[in-house]
Image 1 (cartoon, rainbow over the protein chains, first blue to last red):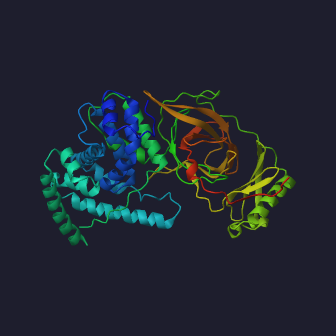
Image 2: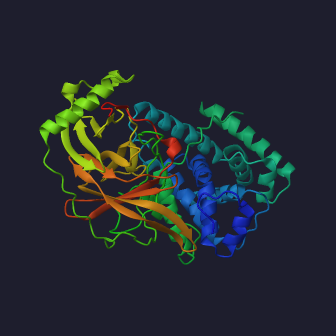
Image 3: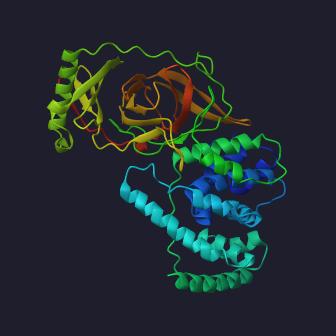
Length: 189
Length: 294
């Protein structure tokens, strides 16, 4: 039996057991990575509210895909990040609803008691959305690398494994993505 | 190039609780035609958290009580989803607890207790943080396992608690960071606000309840199984008057879960949430001392 706090079992082993239908193993993966996926989802959306939805859906998607995926690296995180990125991009592409919903959301943190914290969060959201607006113009291949390596801080090797390309390819994508983002963000400022 | 990204945050407990509820519920659902759908969750995110009767909620980490005394430190939980759970209390699921009777306030006794707490507060290094004794107004008092807990309000309305025994007097932290037990979901409104301000080593939990009339705390352990989680524990009813509540949750150990369910005056469940006790995260009380040594 896997406990919620158990960390001794590797992601790969938990994933293997989850693929066999073991709810407890998958739940342990969720407990282990929920925070990281939630943070990454924020960086993909610029909204903590949407991040919660994206993160939950990422795990649901992972559960549904569990039999189709074999972890090739030690951590499940790079793959979960990639799933989150796909969810956001697909929703993005499918319609404008995602962005419209994003714009409708109230300033988050409004339930907090401290004005400074609220102001800081609003600044964070603005900054994040500015970066994402720039990233939205990137070609898909570059955006995938940007999301994994720059937003998710995944290693080049892990990103290459998840994307199924050579590490040199990831480096090239990142280089081009950086150049485009720099230009975009400089023009914006 | 420096993107100057916002720092990562610790996942709040109420968010974790909601995510967990959705994910665990999804593990048993048949596969959808489409992998995910962000629209429904978006609508849910803007909604109000109201739980169905008897729904089980499982929450997650929070603060706890420290070495001698404690104020709950951090996180919270709110649930708007349910997780299958096996009720362990004698009360059937969905049946509201009967209100705990609160005796009429004995003004003289309350004044005596508050005097003791005020004296301890005045002698503490944090004396300047407390309002003057004359601004302390008792609201109600309950006796729990040899402790007499007097809920009072300071000048300006700040809810506070005075905990006396035959030999000790303890007062809650006037600067306590509220530990949200049921709160507002991100981006949404709220119908209930429940937060702890005081947790004694003897297991007295006290705080503020707004938007509801009754509070029921289940204290126990979450045990994983192949079907999800089961909550194994006992039920404790809180004394509630005004906006303040007091409940005896008993001695807690790391990993214990406290699942709170709040009801309106008619006994209709309104919301639920919980947290996991972690002793290391408990903050000290406002002031405490043996004021009547034997």
